[in-house]
Every structure is written in structure tokens, then in C-alpha cells.
Amino acid sequence: MRFLILSDIHGNIDALDAVLARSPPESYDRLLVLGDLVGYCANPNEVVERIFQLEPDVVIRGNHDKFSAGVTEPDDFRRVAAEAARWTHRALTPENRERVAALPAGPKRVNREIEVCHGAPSDEDTYIADEEDAMRAFEASRRPICFFGHTHVPVAYVQRGSDVAATHPIPGGPDTTVIDVDKKWRYLVNPGSVGQPRDTDSRASYAVYDSRKPSIELRRVPYRIDLAQQRITEVGLPESLAFRLGLGR
Ligand code: ZN
Image (cartoon, rainbow, N blue to C red):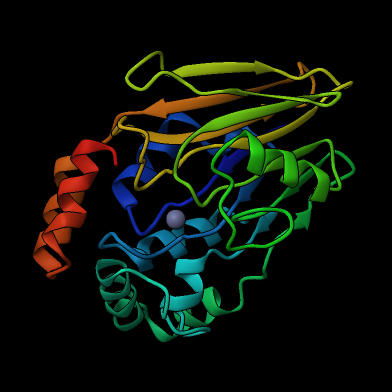
């Protein structure tokens, strides 16, 4: 079984389409979406519609989905993020706003091997930023493989006994980083962000898990950043949101 794993698309249709061109529907069996479909970039409706067209097996909400759909108030958001959430709330069609508002919270069990969450298995809004956070997340996780998002930084944590080690793809490095999966160990993997990467690599980031090999690939795909930036500027979203796409942070 081949899984395509997407997270933190954030309304960036140019990045999403580049990913889907590289990994079209015939290349995978199941689609898992880890939240934050919208917020930050200029095409939230197109992203929501594209994702629902693809009929994902699992799609959960992220913090930006909650705020943009009006499920909760963006109290703890920074100014620019809150401004983008308010803009997205207005830009979404009533139908798409309802779809986003109805997204379930993680964690979600996908099968006996996999679960997904937006932030962490214990809490959808918690960040897993280092090995210590990963250790706690392994304790809360109920499956051998957990995919998470929220930090916009691709990484694979592997737990061997009491030891946790991290593999970070090299920013600007090869377009594929392969993590071999040993059924004896446990894995906590962030595919990175499709629409707003923050590891100083501006290419769209996502993951593919092939359970037959078994291995997880962390992949990067270049996309038309200039188009995404132009759209952000045109709709009047903060200029800094366009700028950071070019920096990958
Ligand atoms: Zn996000």
C-alpha cells in the first residue's frame, strides 16, 4: 500500500499542484492530509476543492483551519497570521467554509500501523520541535508510525528502545530522502509543509510511505513561487507572507 502524505498546504495552490504533478493519483493508493489546508496564501477555495476532489482517506484540521472557518478565535495568533486567518474567513465560499469547519480533530487512526495528527498525538495544537518533544509524543502515540505536521519542518524521528534519533533532510539537498522502516522500531514523521516550508528550503515538501518496501520518502518539489507570491500581493495579504515563501522560512 502506498500512502501520499500532505500537510500545511495553507492555500498555496501552485505548490499543491506541483506536488500532485510529481505524485499523481495513480502513483498512490491512499491520501492522508494532516491539516492546515488554508491560511497564509491566496487560494484557499482552490486548495479545499482540489483536496476534496481527491477523496482523501483521512483529512484532519489544523489550527489555521479552525480559525479561518470560525470554529475558534485566533487569540494566540501573531498579527500577520491572524490577519491571514480573517482574510481567509472572508475569502472562503460558504460551502468551503463549512467543509473546513467540519474537519475532525486529530489524532486519527488510519489502520493498525498508522495514525496522523496535526501537532502531536496528545494535542492537536502542540508542536513537536525536538527529540525531547518526540519522546513525549512516542509515549502518547498508539501506532508504530505517526505522521504529524504543524512545524513546517520535515523530519523523521526513530525510536529504538529508549533511544530517539532524528533525520533531517538537507535543505537544498536531494529531492528525496529515504527512511527505511524497520518493523521493530517506531516512527514519528513530519512530511514538512506543502505551501509554506520553514527549513530554509523553499521547495514544496511532502512524504510518501510504501508499506511493501517498507520505506518513507521525504520529498521536495520546486514550484512557481513567483506566481504564489504575486497572488498574495494581488489579494492584499501581508507582503511578508509572499517574501517568506522565497526564503523557505
Ligand atoms: Zn501550518
